Image (cartoon, rainbow, N blue to C red; front, side, top):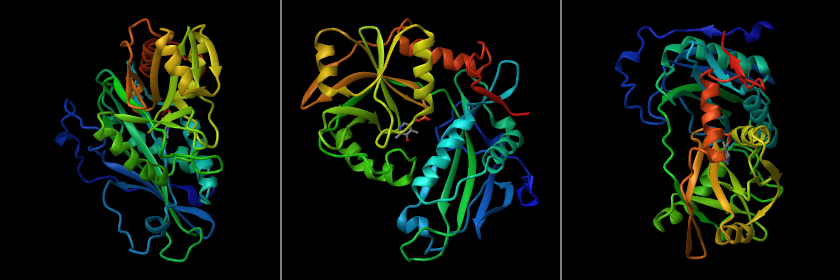
Length: 355
Ligand SMILES: *Cc1c(COP(=O)(O)O)cnc(C)c1O
């Protein structure tokens, strides 16, 4: 390892862990003791350090604030029943972070910086990994443009930061979704495949309108025709129709979710027919009317599987039966939970142990 990649460690004088009520964790509000920071300047990642979690000073001319070069990841660490600390497919997050970086004209992160930084941070804050059923340590790596300049060009300086949050089991209440047929999340050639801040900023207004109309979330449709379903706000979508698992293909407009790719593999493992193809709104409504729409759910890191209870389309609400224990969605969710707790064999080598 080159010398610049040594990580400087500045531990907290006093841990805050005693102040945390692990029985009542609110998602995204509790931050572990430390954070990892790396700086990119003069074409190099440097000044790698783990320091107490806390404020970072920002210049008003910080480029990320003006032009939005900002990308992030979301992943989780778990404590297995045997007490090991494990990460779920972290190399996929690393690859996706770099894919987002390329699209946004930001520098890629070498494996030693992304993986090395995260592993050392998790090791230091291991005590923050909650152990209650379904809980985990949520990891938020992100990178943003840190040049102080208001000219319109890619920044030359960046900050990569990772912090973590202990989170409770996410009891996914079945969601009411509205199929969006006016607003657009992503278009061919756009930035939908990047986990970049602007995508979420752009989705807030349409999502708020849907919430005012009594829905929890939107289902985005393709920008050109609004005939094909794409994904939800921060989740991919899966359907079981006639015993087949169907999910729209990822590409320019659909984020390549790691939970989605895992659930797709599980559908094969569990012997379901698997179709990765475009799904029209019409097909879903028809399948629902014919009684062939067996399951519909969101797929993502936060909840793993979020059952859909109602689909709203053009003023009409289509109600779905709750997912049973035997449903594919609930079996996949249970398998992934068990895997992260070390209770089932890791057939696909999805788990990485933090030494
Ligand atoms: C993060 C995200 C997902 C889910 O990806 P996972 O890797 O499974 O967490 C899906 N869609 C969007 C738009 C996302 O930002």
